[in-house]
Amino acid sequence: MKAASILALIGCLVTVTESKVYTRCKLAKIFSRAGLDNYQGFSLGNWICMAYYESHYNTTAQTQLEDGSTDYGIFQINSFTWCRHAKLQEKNHCHVACSALLTDDLTDAIICAKKIAKETEGMNYWQGWKKHCEGKDLSEWKKGCEVS
Image (cartoon, rainbow, N blue to C red; front, side, top):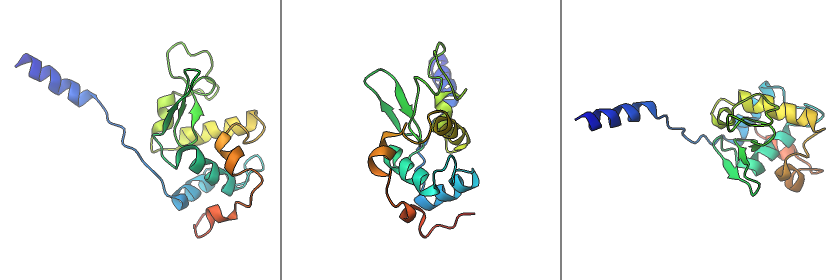
């Protein structure tokens, strides 16, 4: 009986992170409201394209890298430099826990992405953007979306 009670308590304490995969137009609206359109000179299409190729708009995307670090969330922000994964993380330029980048609330992820774009002089940090979006006509990425 005691073991069953403990298991029930543990079950209540464990939180499950459900995967949220946004649509292109929903992200366009969120990104626009967050001030990403023309942030650091990059159009909304750049941000939508980058998020697609980094995470396929999946808020819980995680990619384990060969150096032992992990990329987190919709923008695939790296744990080594930008967020705190462990207690003794050397860097944490965004001053955020990596787990905060995996939620449906994109506030922390957007704030951190803005910091990355500003501190690294653009969007070159994101390989998905460099490979698939840089230098291309990105007007199609927000076509048909109502953004305010």
